[in-house]
Length: 218
Image (tube, rainbow, N blue to C red; front, side, top):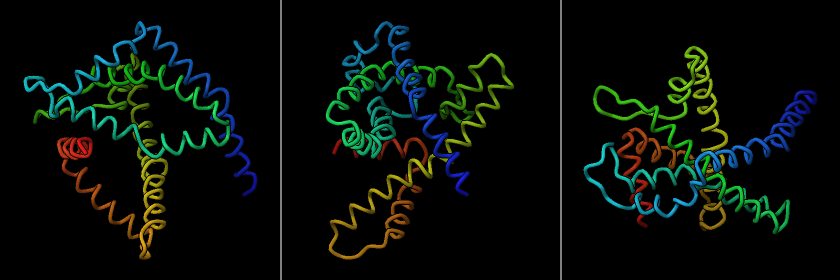
């Protein structure tokens, strides 16, 4: 068992060490140069995102798309992650957070552009897209792309429970436990928010976008 733990720790150190930093920041720099410093269009993009255009195609409005994207991007990772960076690296870590954030705009733009380019429309008019479709339809080797799409979807499913939902609901449960005068079991918090999330997700993209829009307005 100790050998397994050591292997996982060594693999974690190797993946999340210098190679990952070079890969991520290198991608940010490459995309920044490749897009002609797309960051200069940030305020134009914000203006378009909050401007209503009823004639535009799609199931959701521009603002709903913006709030949905922000909801999946800004969360406990950004808050806890920055706090952890400052704790481990000191105040100077904020500078690197800002730099990677600014250059990371180009990577996020490229990711969104690819998602829109390779999305598909179902027979009933709904739009479906994401990295799975981009991998399957974008790579030249179709069989390899389909295999990578399946692998990505499987890992995304696993990550959504452990890295995403697990971390976030645990943070919510800790806040409720610390601030509510009565004892609320953590399992009850998890079940309650799980049911609410299920209701929103089952409603489809329109339901998700509507909820994100309402939360964004408040």
